Image 1 (cartoon, rainbow, N blue to C red):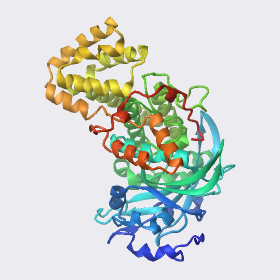
Image 2 (tube, one colour; image 1 turned 135 degrees about the vertical axis):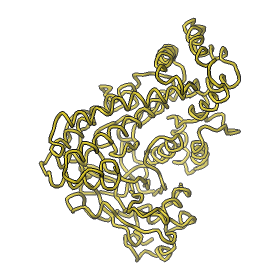
Image 3 (spheres, one colour; image 1 turned 45 degrees about the vertical axis):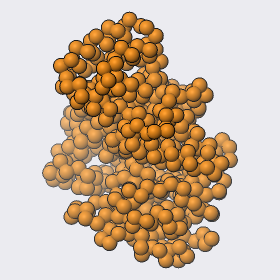
Length: 510
């Protein structure tokens, strides 16, 4: 195989002209920023690439030809061995706080942005979807790393980002997963993989922190104006250079972040490493590392075995997001030039989070009309679930079915005869009696998933793929793409986790 990376010289690039739909084009918005924001570079080729997972619907929505992912050319491009005409590969620079401490310059250490693709018929605004390769080789920001990703972590990111999308939670997407037998050295020797991930923008809180920390206010303003003009229509109504423009940006980011975190909490998702460089300016879930969906409910659960202090425990995620917004506010303060106005913009997070959390829990209980009072029902229930180690996903799904089939007393088996649950059930039945039961049940079944990406399911798919068997991965991917539906023959994917699942250790290296 020719390992020389090129726009045109690869033997597989004869298919390049057929890669895009008519009218799709590379517009590369981030590349229009000055060179201080990125380093242009080439991905580092790898041998024997195989495209083991491809997201056809996403590819078509982006503007790729519907069958392009089936070609060898796609494996070469999405594995980092070749570029399509119009791609402009680069790694971006940012800084950030990691585990609450200033870490200084970071940047895309193993992610390479290939450009931004605008699909045909996407309107007149110059905005598309950015395509980024994670694991495509070293960059100037790799520090002591090798710029590679391993099969294990790549499978987890691909499956989880698409599972989150299917759950309706804002997230980066996964276009493909390409593998290579090239060895990668972590705790053990593993094989390499590249995930092609997609988002409107990969700009993070840390991009702003980077230039603010260096007192490079012109660059800070350039970045802020870029994201406002392209992604924040409400802030764009204010003229460039005015404090109101940047305060509106900060307030919008705060509200988007609040809505995202509320959805995490409602579905039982633990991110695991909410550093400021892992926070999307668009309120997207980004950087799937030591994540986990709760098995039994535990508000203090720590999914990241690198998090010895429990900074990123499940119940602390809303607080940490607020702390991260303060870091972003500190970075934007020179542009807003008013501390009170900056704090007011950050504090938009609080009512947005409360409103989103109450609405989410009301939907889980089938009582959208009771959202203002829902905490009086939700909090005692969560306390009982913690006391009895109740499985978070299965209980909510069973509650949905029980409302639909008028079998609420049958839920008592989760609580070992605890009279406190009987009391709670009576309290729940009072507002439920005022609701349209069919509508309530329908809402609950569309809100409480049957399937989530539990750690042990991901681990089973990983171990099979490491043996060359991708059938479990494909089966899991298919089910997670429709998590609110019943899938015949997939009962094992919606069962209680086995005892060995509690011993799975997921760390930052994952």
